[in-house]
Image (tube, rainbow, N blue to C red; front, side, top):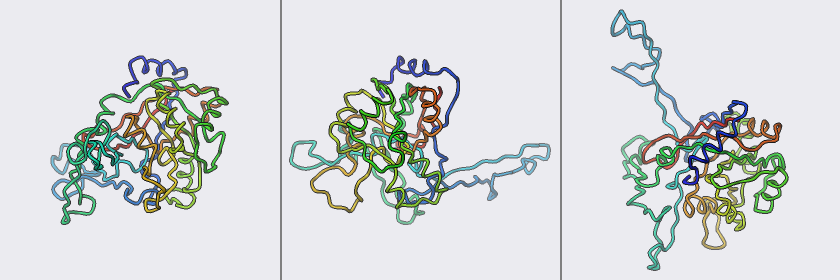
Amino acid sequence: MNYVTREKVLQGIAEVKEGKTFCLSLPLDYPGGQVLNPRRAPPRLAATSREGKQFFCRPLYEYNENMTDVICDDQVLMALQYSTQWDSFAHVGSRFDADGDGKAEIVFYNGFRAGEHIVPAAENPQSEPWSRFEGTEAKALGIQGLAEHGVQGRGVLIDLHHHFKRERKAIGYDDLMRVLEKDKVEVEKGDMVCFYTGFADVILEMRKKPDAKLLGETCTGLNGRDAKLLQWICDSGLAVLLADNYAVELIATALTDPLPKTQPWLPLHEHCLFKNGIHLGELFYFTELARWLREHKRNRFLFTAPPLRLPGAVGSPATPIATV
């Protein structure tokens, strides 16, 4: 995001020709259930309360008979990465020998350490299940840093769905270069790169009842194990990577599957979040934008997508906007 300078913001604004906007977020109660990720529950809305009564459709004449106001006030319990989301650099770190002493440490981007800078919570077994581990804090690398920088600049959309439809395919460097050439897409330093795969469309079609088998067999994602692709990500100077799928990259194995050698389960996440300081965005919604851009022979737009300014959080929901 350091590449998203004042000049890049102006480049994004220069892409606005029609004043037309597109919402790039799924409804935040999608995908529904916990099939996509068993540790992330859907959001729960509830009214706030006062004096034992809910403050929802609450007439204030109960306090003062001359007041005509009626108040609704609510709260939410949600996983910050349940739906359309940003990953902070505190989301994925790595175990490696950072000190050169032959022993692996848990380290995050720029050398920040688990337990000191990224702090787990003390367990409270007597609390409610949701708050059993309340008190985690990303003292460094929290999502507030992205919010404070401001996420606005030039977006570039790469339409993988147009070329591969809903084929389950890991997109490597060679595939990507062919798509960029066919669609005349240029990625420049500081651009915010968005991939439309169609995965979010599948989620919406399931109407909050996701089918795990189908989700595991549909749509493209980047091949995080393609070294040439990872090198292109660095060489291009892109600022962030975003996709409408679950993890930007395709996840090929379950957590319990054996790996042939010591390696990350999420190599693209390690490459971007841990090694190079490139934020990832997941489960965005690009369908209408992608159709409009293709119809008008464009692929660039003004992209605005601030996360919540929530200190200490490692991820955040977002309601991004594209303006063309």
